[in-house]
Image (cartoon, rainbow, N blue to C red; front, side, top):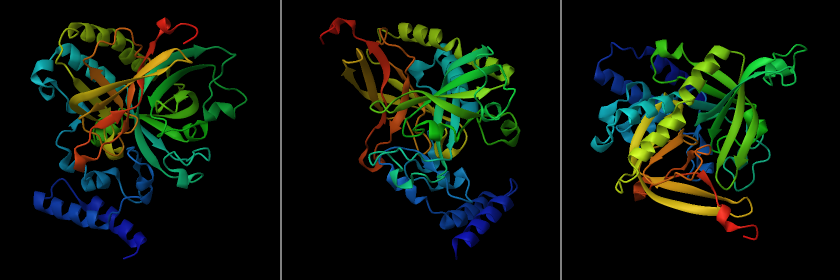
Length: 365
């Protein structure tokens, strides 16, 4: 059977699978489809990173069902269903749940349709430079700015080519991993999908898609990238900002409440595994590493954790609850960077985050 036939068969099986099927029939259809599904070879070109690479003709659910790292995904909770009962008993705090709900609302699925020529041999997908390799990852909103200034017209693709660009628009900044979105070339071919919280068709009607415009900031060593999306929908931007505004204060209040608990070590991730709907996973952070950049007078931290991740989780926000970080700036929050080898029990790992000013180093440090 050639690939075209396999893809057509896959689509037909998915289309014919209805809610009225018995569990045995559904299982048979899934097994038949999986027998035709083969992961994209580019997945082998990213080391421990966890970007999902889309296979033409197959939905993300095929990769989900074929997943070897987390078969069945028992520890992945749909964002729309996450509740206090999903938290460890000692963390069943309504403020923690409120934080997670707001934080999850800011988490977005990223779809990238370009591979920059400037990726180096050390970067994932180097072999696919210049190719329209369709990939998916995760990001999170960090900033929302409403702009009303003739000097700063909207930079979206529609306005860039218009003689009358919009001068009242919103800039929404999204943070992800650098290996997910590498530079301006890739950003311009990146879409950020909001409110993809479950697979229900009714929910999908409420999703909003924004498109990348430019890189705002990035760091290769820390494996993070912050980029800008633009929208003319100020009502939507206000909605997102309403979720973002209370987040920092709530996080600081929770951090203070648990400051003296030496045993606290929770790590939570919100992501779009396999390019599917948004899920939340809960685990424990294991090790914290600090490294310094004296030229910039900064220090960063990275974490390893047991929290579940899959292909598509790269760039996802990681919320660490535990160590005293009162002197650190959450402006640069942690993003998921690497997946550990599940066959060896290796933990997953974040990129660099929690930037700290080290004024005591002095001018000659």
